[in-house]
Each structure stands twice: as structure tokens, then as C-alpha cells.
Image 1 (cartoon, rainbow, N blue to C red):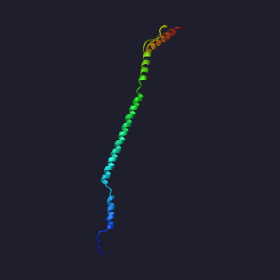
Image 2 (spheres, rainbow, N blue to C red):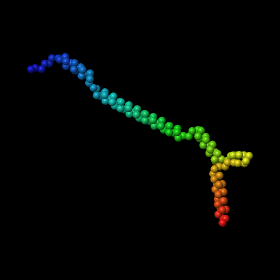
Image 3 (cartoon, rainbow, N blue to C red):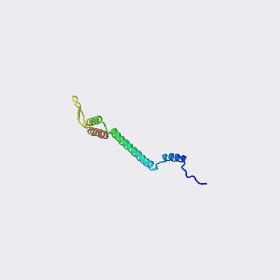
Length: 118
């Protein structure tokens, strides 16, 4: 039995259908690599944005406000400077370190006088 070399129309339809469904592996690989690189860059960019924003927020929280700085400076001036508390009564405020020295000297004088008595 001889093989018929005649053109089979059913074979043409299958070939045409298969030709349209061939997968272009090279193009698929290029798209996959591009997508992976784009995804990686997006993740790195988002992470960098997060850390930058997080660091800025941390610095903002740690940095004292102008109002707090002014209050601390005023308090520092009050405990480290001389000023009138009540001028008519001649009451003054002295620096804290000077006040400590005077208190220590007073208690040392009291202790030394008490130590001599029987």
C-alpha cells in the first residue's frame, strides 16, 4: 500500500491552529527578567523611602521643639543666675551651685560646733 502524498485539508487546519499557539520562549524569558528586575527595583525604592521617612520621623520626635528649648533655657537661667525674688524684702535667688556650697558650709559649721560639745 502506497502512502498517499496528496494534500490533506484536515492536516492544514491542525498546522495553522498549532502555529498560532507556539510559545515564544525567548520573549517570555525577556519579559520575566524585565518583570523581576522591575519588581526588585520597586521593592528597593519603597524600602529606601520607608527608611528615609522613618529616620526623618525619628529625628523630628527626638529634636526638642522651639518652645521646649525656650522653656529649658529660661529654667537654666533661673537656677544658674542671680535675680530678685522679692526686692522689697531683699530676697534673691543665687546660682544652684553657690547655694549648695553655702548649705554644705552651714552644715559643716553646725556639725563642728556640735562635735566639740559633750
